[in-house]
Length: 92
Image 1 (spheres, one colour):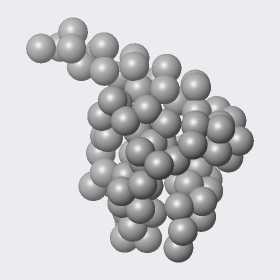
Image 2: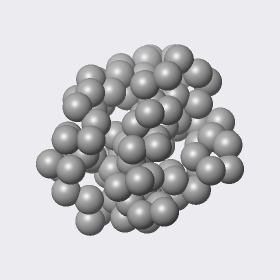
Image 3: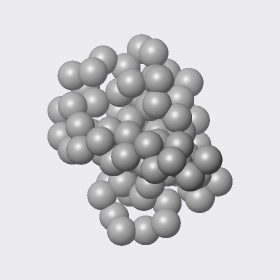
Image 4: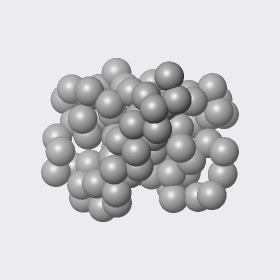
């Protein structure tokens, strides 16, 4: 599996309404901006975790345009991640 296949796989999962969709989204947001935390990686099954690890390993080399083309909703997902981060800080 190459990086593009891994992005497509996690993008499909990220668009679902499942427990693992948040983890898939966080990996893709990390690939788009490596300063974001990766959340709930444990929720991914073995194949999706493998895709996530491929993306994480290549995150610094993935062009932003590729992510935006394959995952048009990446900006919305980044906003969701920011809101999660802020809500977590408020609880502390």
